[in-house]
Image (cartoon, rainbow, N blue to C red; front, side, top):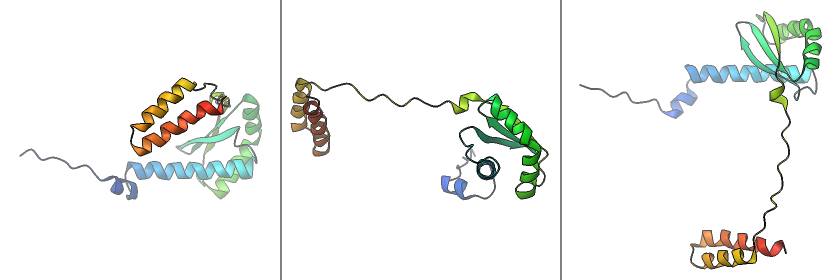
Length: 151
């Protein structure tokens, strides 16, 4: 009496042309196309400073890195609106520009690992490698070699 619902297979969800996942995928593809058009045709070399964030109810939302970029896009807004309407989205009503500096913060380069393996640790690793399976033994021996490299 208690019937269980079997979930849809992942293959079916990924290949289905209708449903939520398909709609999300279509919208993501559309935003990528618009973003590529923006950063290559309308504002060449601007991919580090502006990007298409969303398209909802005929309003294209563009995020920019700073107020300077916001001012620049505001000055070109009517031109962009016309170009995007002609080439991509005929029913585009408006372009909204939002400043979001957090998205464009450059991440510092990772610090090199300054830790060293002592000779005693290398000896322990080699001893462990003697009693370990072949695959693990090989990795332990490579770690032990690091102690010799730092001397």
